[in-house]
Image 1 (cartoon, rainbow, N blue to C red):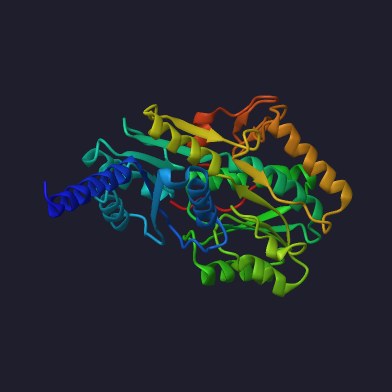
Image 2: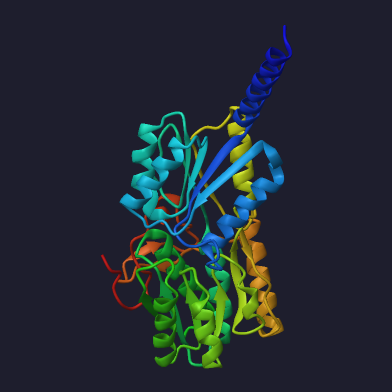
Length: 357
């Protein structure tokens, strides 16, 4: 065997070894509805992606596409990701539900995880967090701290997840202060700082001195800061840069443990389709620091409520609760079932206005 043959053989061996190493990596893709720097929803999903890389090191390769519109564009993005060799793809917005199902049919060997949806398949799991638990705590603080008795809520889209949040926040604000009124502005966006700022300003002009949001940018925080005597709550991420005021606390989405567990399941060959819906107790929903802008007594009450929810002593949807039209929904002590909550399409009694179609 001559020297040239030896070199060629060594090169081939190295190439095959490199290919084997590449194949050993688990490729994980992410489809994001907003930019990774949105400061809210997508930011936290991307933090979880980075946590994956830190946890698994060179055992994983992650790829992502940000600011992917819900609909046909997302289906194309998912298809391209699957074609590029992804073993597992996380699709991180409600509007990706049907596109995820469609693409999963074409790639039965690829695993998909869809956030906040309800349609599953053999290779599609669903996962979400019980954000309404955090809304209950925000509602309590809001009801105690409002001086105008007017609370504004910037809503994204009229889907059950958002409606649950509005209802939970209102129920607990009203328990804390029977005189509160809620005004809901539908922004019809997850992330649009200009629209979100306009919504916040409109609510503030109407007299709201507390602003809650189910949109992803920090624009409402900035609007409240500029207005002065208005408080806010971080959405999906801590938004701590606006603490101690206007941001007095936050809901923090902690996806990293779930993502790590699901990638590990793919690696182990134990992944199976399932539905996950966790809250404060398991740690998927975190409550950001309650700042000293909140009176000590109110802070103590909010933390007690958090603990009661976390250990299962209290459920935010516990009767008696009527629907908006006054018809009974939950009797005294009755707890809402997950099926009703998952499909919630009604306001509770006391909320004004209609839910858009």
